[in-house]
Amino acid sequence: MSVLSRGQRSAGVLMHVTSLPSRHGIGDLGPSAFAWIDRLHEAGQQWWQGLPVGPTGFGDSPYSALSAVAGNGLLISPDLLVEDQLLAARAIEGQDFPPETVDYDAVAAFKVGLLHIAWRRFNGGARPDLAGPFEEFCTRQAGWLDDYALFRA
Image (cartoon, rainbow, N blue to C red; front, side, top):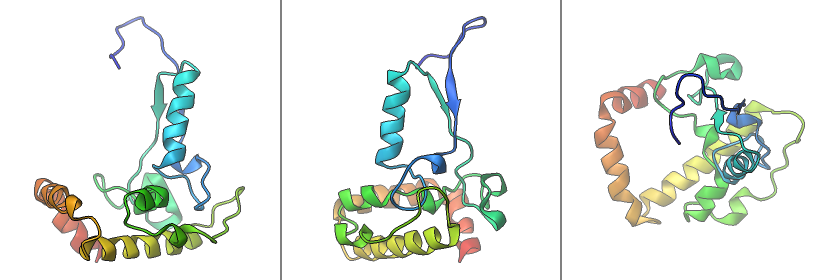
């Protein structure tokens, strides 16, 4: 995508990723996000302003993020964790969330539980090919990651 020159016009949509449809209680950066981007492209839209995606604190507001650089774990896609073989498909079945409202406490409990399972599987060697990229990420991001991990712990 090119940057617009002065006088050029473009169109896009302002929408937080949590507003995407999801069977997991809250929109995430998984299949529905990719489908949304495809729909925007098909409609001739050039921009998706996604709003802050940091980990939220009191009130679950994206504007009250606990970090300026960390991502919100609730936005990790359970479907993609299944695809990456870090979760079994049965782990994400059977949880019913109402499509018209978000119960952040219920979503957080469900997704944090899934993230714990995925982490245990990763540490247990379920995807040894991901160990190198993970270590590289931790090394590259150590300037903020170590302090943030300590803060969250």
